[in-house]
Amino acid sequence: MSILWHLLPLFSALPVILTCCFPRQIRFDILVRGHEKYEEGEGMDYSENRTFFYDEIMNCTLLRGTPFGFPMEIFTNYSSGIEYTVTDECAMRVINGGFNKMCLPSNAVLQRTVRIPLSVKDVSVYRANVSDYTGVLQQEYGVIQERDSCYFLWSKTEGILNDFGLRGTFSETLTYQNIQTLSENGPVFEIPGKCHDV
Image (cartoon, rainbow, N blue to C red; front, side, top):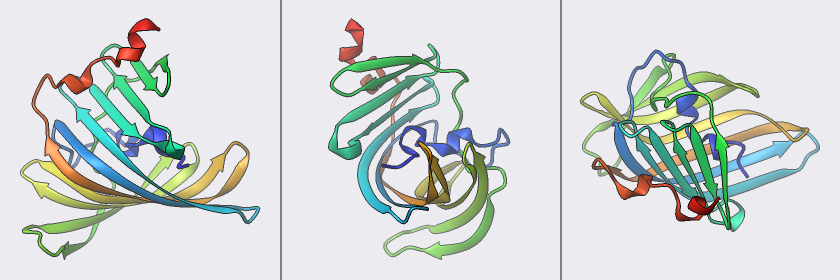
């Protein structure tokens, strides 16, 4: 399984200098495809569908997916500082740090502009290097810019895998689909029912 699962938006860990960002309230489906290769020679391909809700006004995110075939939701309320992970039960944890806008990194460099069939707009392809706890990640983004917002069509991340004592490399591609802006006060950002009894 991807080491990026709980970090879905690596974008949110990016520098504070903002360039082009998601709309303030948005929902999209994500098709995740990845490959991990360990120094011991073993490798693994994976794919997964996820749905992500992002609301800068309410300071909340919700990620739904099925890692390893098991349904999971991660609801993060940055205003209260609590993250709820729901599987067959609910686990809560306190999070440090505030809500981070989901933006292109400030060091993103435009590589080229492409036209996708049936698209009325050109897609700008950016590359950037972003640091995380494993080292430097190389990222590519396919973006359509509309007014002051960016709509990501895909992103690709390559980097070093250093998980549970295993070392290797990984690449992961996220394809964004069914992108919709949200209205305020959507019921999706309510504390999950299973978590009321915890």
